Length: 139
Image (cartoon, rainbow, N blue to C red):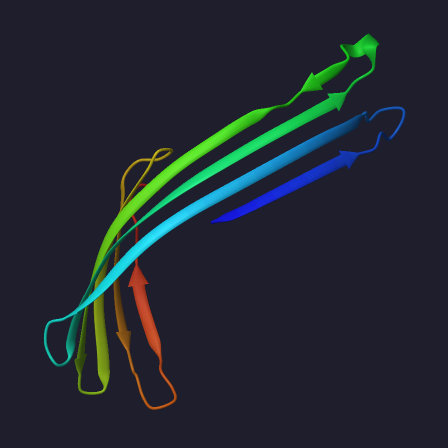
């Protein structure tokens, strides 16, 4: 869980820019689970799920002179929930490590998305190299 508060006061720059006051809060809560399953001596399957909630609140006032309408509120609240499941299959063959993975996500503010990925790695004692290719749908 993370939480952040921020208060801002922007002084007036007369004669054209009025004073403004703003207070923003943002909270994020995330839960995740992952389970590696050994299929063979050199093959592993990882499965998991995660969920996240985000809550934001903004309270602001633009302090216009009374002749221009007075104070103007700029308040808004935003809430977003998301979750996903994934699976990844890894296999070592000789000097190489291969991996294919798929993650499916859904969010309250977006359409469902799939994120397939593939990787190849060159592990070694004290060093490793990994290159991958991935793409997503929905954007």
